[in-house]
Image 1 (cartoon, rainbow, N blue to C red):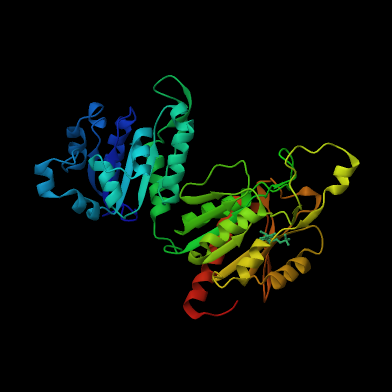
Image 2: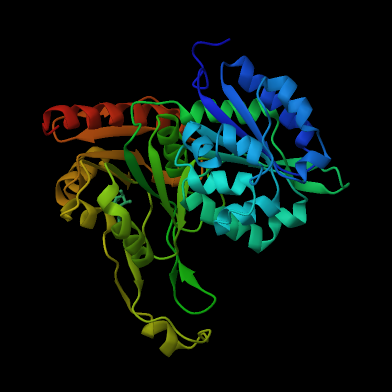
Length: 410
Ligand code: C5P
C-alpha cells in the first residue's frame, strides 16, 4: 500500500454505469484498494447487466449499493450519509446517459442522488460510442459539469466495442488513477484560484473576416496544466485556439478582446493570481459590416480601427485586483527595456518577456523567457513551454504564498 498516494485512507465512491467498459472498473476498484482507499461501489441498474455486484464486493470488501429505495441498505448508511462519507466520487465508466442525468441534477437513482448531495471532489471517466461523444448535447452536458468543477478524465481514441474507431473509449485504469493522484493532491496552491488568459482574440471585420495574430495559446494552456498540478482551481479564458482543454480546468471560450474582458471581470473577485498570457488584439474595426465587404476602394478606406480595452491593465486597476498580476511581453527588440516599461505602465507584479523577432516562439513548442520584476530581471535558459510553465508556476506560487504571509511588495 502506498503511503504517498493521495488516495491512501480516502473514502471513495466508485460509480459504475452501464457500458462495456464496466470490466475495466473492476481493475479500478482493485487498484483503489491497493492504494489504501476505502471503496464503496455504487452501480446503476444498467451496470448490473454487465458485471455482478458480487464481483465488486469481492474486490472491495464492501457491500455494493445499487438502489435508492432499498430499505435494508438505507437503514445501514442512508444515501445522504453516504454522500457525506465520501472524500471523492469517481464515476468510471460514465455513460452519455449518466452524464446527462448528472448535468441536469436529476436524483432518479442512487448514483445521481449521491452526486447531487455530495460536496466532495467529483471526477468522471466518460465511455461511449464516438457519435454519442461528439453529439452537441453530450458536449453541452460535459461543459456544464466542467463549470461545476468536475474533473474529466479522458476519453481516449481508438477501436470501440461497437466497431467504430474514434473518441469515446474509457481511459485505461492506470491513466484514470494517475489523473486522480496528480489533480487531487493538496499542492501549494490548494484552495487558491488562478485565472489565465490565453490564445489570440478574433476581431470581426464582417461576417467572414477578422483581425487576429499568430498566438497558438500553447504557453497559456501549459501554464493552466502546471497550475492544476500545483492544486489550484484554474479558470482558463481563451480566445479561439486549436488545443484540447486541459483536464481539471474551468474553460471559458471567448472570441474578442471585449468578450475576454467581460469573462475576466465577471469572476475576478475569486482570483488570487492572474496571468495574462493571451495575445489580445490591441485594435478592432470600429464597425462590423453586416454583409461581406466588397473590395471597393471606399470599403478599404472605410476600415477604421479603434483601440481595444487592455484586459490586464483593467485587472491591475480593479478594486478586485488579485494579489499577483503577471503579464507577458512579446518583443522584437530592446526586450527587457520594453518589458519593464509595460510592467510599470500596466501596474503588474511580474512580466515575462520573450523575443518574438523572426516569428520565433509563436506556435513553437520551445520558448526562452526573461522574468522581470520591479527589482530585478532573471534570464532563464531555453526550454519546452511545458517545462518553463512548470518552473514559472512554482516560482509564482512561492511569490503568492510569500505575499499572503507578509503582505510585502516584490
Ligand atoms: O501591450 P502588450 O500587448 O505588449 O502587453 C502584453 C500583456 O498585456 C500580456 O500580458 C497581454 O495578455 C496583456 N494585454 C491585455 N489586453 C490587451 C493587450 C495586452 O490583457 N488589450
